[in-house]
Length: 343
Image (cartoon, rainbow, N blue to C red):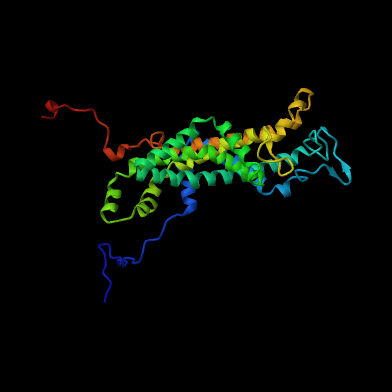
C-alpha cells in the first residue's frame, strides 16, 4: 500500500490514535491565576505568595534557623539577661522571662502555621458538607441548619472563640488543637452560607435534573455533580479566613487562652507580656512578634484579594491587546469617495 500524497507532494502523515495527552496538571492549575493576572492583581498575588512562602519556610525549618529553642533561657551554663538588649548571643534581645526573642518569633510562625492548617481543614470538613446537604435537601433540615448557623454567625467572632476555647481547655490536653477548634467554630458558618447559596442555585440546573432523571442517588449527585461546581469560591474564602485566623489566634494568646506558654511560642502571648516593656523604652520584646502578625496577615490578605480579583468573573479584568493593521494588508490609504463620485 502506497502512502497518499498531498497537493504539495509531501506524504500525508497518518492520524494519531489513542487517548489525547493531558496537558498540564496540578502545577498548571496553581499557576493559572498568576498567568491570568496582571498589573495590581499580579503584584498582590506575587508579593503575598512570596511573603507567605518565607513564613512557611521559617515555620518548617524553625529548629534549624532559630538560634535556640522557644523555651531556652540559658546557653553554655549562663542564663540570658531579662529584657536584655540585642547582642551577639541574642540578636533580637530577650524577654522579661529571659527567653530569646528571635527564637520565640520564629517558633511563633510554626505555631501559627499548625493552628492555621488545622483550623482551615476542620472548617472545610464541617462547613462544606453541611452546606451541600442543607442546600440540596432543603425542607425542615435546611431551616434547622440555617437557624443554627445564623445563631453562631450573630455572635462576635472573638467572643465566640473565647467561649469555645474556655470550654475546651480542660477537655483536650493540646492547646494547639483547642485553639484550632475554637477558630473552627467561628468560620464554619461562613463556609456553610457560601456553599449553601451556590448549591441552591445549582440544584435546579439542567445537568442536575438529568442526573435525577437517570436515577442517580442524592449522595451521588452531591458528590459527583454538585461538589465540583459549588466550591469554586471556597479557596478565596479560605485564604481570607486564614488571615483572619492569625488575628484570632493572637487575640486568644493575648488573653492567655488556648496555647500555654510552656507548650509553644505564640505571638499574641509575647505581645501581652511586652505591654509593660513598651512604657519602659524596651521596644524589642513587642516589635518582632508584632511584625510577625502584621506580615502574616498582610501576606494572606494580598493572596486572597488577588485570587478574588482573578477568579471572580464580576471583578475579572482581562488584558485587551490593541489590533495592529498594517497599510499593506488593506491597500494604500486613499481619500474616501462618495457614491456620486464613484458613479
